[in-house]
Length: 344
Image (cartoon, rainbow, N blue to C red; front, side, top):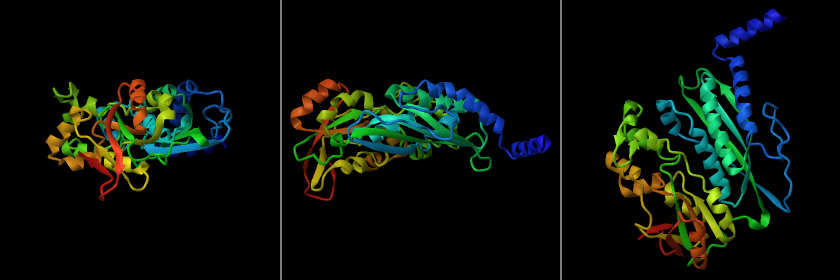
């Protein structure tokens, strides 16, 4: 029986799947995951499922988000730098559930590649764990899949699933927004995790990745360093201001025009003031390099605003005091045309 099992295992390895490597990876990342644990976590990493005991809430509503990092992964692979890509993923998911006012509880990841490289997986998981620890979210489990033939050699996919909780009577959904409310923007740290397919085409990165090592004076660093800047998390800086917030929009794919209207009640539009926030140099560089018109830039990229919040005009000063990085960028007005976001 032992000889037969050994033969099957060797055949599987010859087909490109190394079970022993997967086991080694699990052992290496357990330490990182354990560091993010919370008292509510009832299982250790490696069990068939993650158990989380929900307690301490009157009317808890679970809030979930699942997302990936997009083709920013190709930049990480081109530079063989995987230390921040996990941070991107956790922050993206945390921002999404936070738009409802939710506190992050636990996170699961999915990493798939053609051949498992323990050092690479460990670097990714360290980023996941670091970001989870910063927002108080438990890295409760995940899946590491080796699938030869499905992914290009040395490339991979990364997906995350986050669950948070909010009291039912404290859900933020934009329904209380009305005309005259203020629109406040929080700065992004760069592209975050959107627009990378266009950026790769503009700079011809797939054909000549050496451009990632080019130092641009306006950026103060290389193109690759700029493109790998982690997605900013807004939960820590905004959670104390939740009672003042009527709505939040995470500015991801679709930019401000595609995301801000998602929280506006029918009959209302966002009127934004041009020049009310600084646009980071990376966006001007992309626009010039690719001869991209302004409308397309705002549809694809966040253009320097990673999160938008709406509050009463009377609460603006208090929000700006609590969140020094925030800027007043516009107001909510009655809709008179087709556009849901107006730039003036």
